[in-house]
Image (cartoon, rainbow, N blue to C red; front, side, top):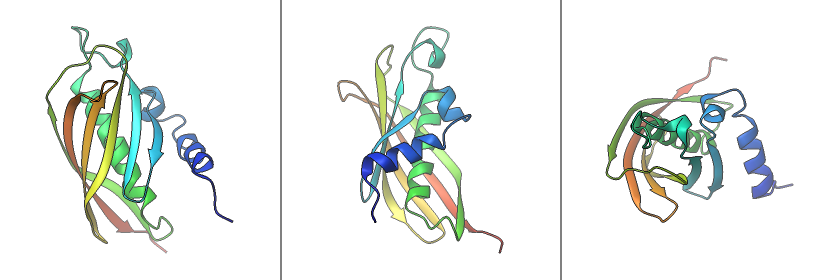
Amino acid sequence: MSISKEAKLKQINAVCKNTLMETLEITISDFGDDFLIAKMPVNSRVYQPDGVLHGGATAALAESVGSFASHLFSNLDEVFVRGIEITANHVKSVTEGHVYAKATFLHKGRTTQLLDIRVTDDDDNLISICRLSTISLPRKK
């Protein structure tokens, strides 16, 4: 029996308890055959001292959604996934609302994966463009 998308999202978000994702209030909100979307509230918990979204919080959002995408599309009985490099270019600041990160695959290899992650605000303005490389390593038997 196939699990519904709603039930899968509930499972995905449940494994985020007691993690950085929970601390930053990052939730996975949608996924499809080749993408994953997460959202994070913009408030004082993720501000720089001058009251705008911290680039490190944006990078944490991007790494979370990209790594989750690699996990979701991998056979976790055989491999575990780790991020190996992230870049982030911040193009606009945000002071309130939410930011959304959409991860899509540029390369989905057996060993390495490359994801494009676009971070937008509530009005769909581009906030940051990120790239994440992940690696799938074999589990010890």
